[in-house]
Image (tube, rainbow, N blue to C red; front, top):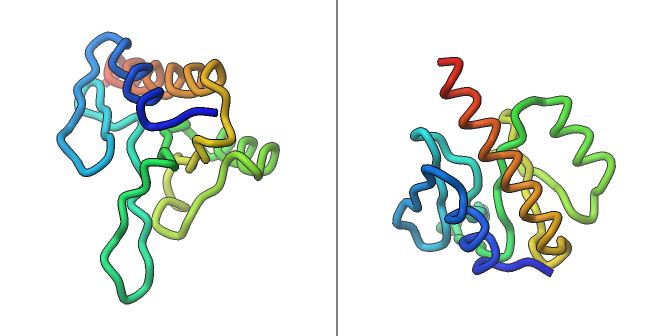
Length: 117
């Protein structure tokens, strides 16, 4: 089972990562976010920062759909994130090895994008 501290430890071990000050966690590389805590939006209320759920950059719609359809207990989306190549990850459902792989992949995609740009 993963948690906020695992996300922080894994992300900060990667080259060039900066943590933006926030209520939860928010990690960037090359100026682009790759993993951050979920700002849950509840109708008629202020958003709630959820550190038990991570928003994870996945690069494209095909990867997003593969994760959402293949592991619905682990990955989901919401209306605010649906248009983007992002998935929401239930940290309590993922082991730290898989979490490290997911965060590392998100970081690598952002670094590769910066190298192409």
